[in-house]
Length: 227
Image 1 (cartoon, rainbow, N blue to C red):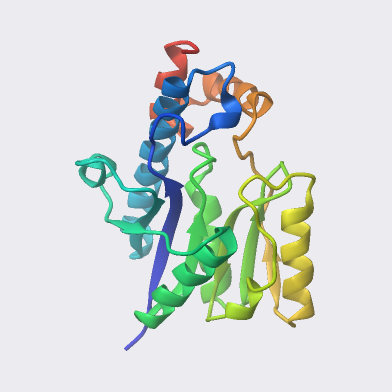
Image 2: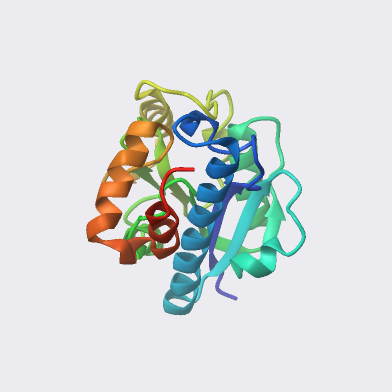
């Protein structure tokens, strides 16, 4: 039986004081949680479009206990992230997915609500077509908004420091260098915005003023003003 592609959305439970804390100020803790929930709604909506277009399975993998009704609000099945740090959580997510018979598997962040569906679709096409074994989508802050594998590669994440708040352009570069040292064939997507800092939020807000369709829930939230 042919394996089925899996799209895993990596996120956090949108709880006040636990998400988007580096956006405070200008946002309040409650405002940051509200904005991040809007991010999740838009990311899940895009994933559901891809589910129909590509026939992939979609799951939202969260840290933190989800609030009642969150799965229904997002419209996709929820699952927990497991592991002590980001690298372990990604390794475990890939391991579980491949063990269930899925493949290829793409992990997509929840901090880029305006990311075009076509970018994720391109990642699946590259992996399914055999153009690469690993696909990376670098973000403008030095990390990556997407990572996809065509087959299990647990050694990719071992010994690789991937702190949630790493800066300085090193996370993407370290991952790429490590992958190449392992002999993996890598494809790199176009860079995209990852919203972590107030300056990132300003860029997102400007973009959504002219293209609100890219993230309609986030655009509507931002139209309400900083809070």
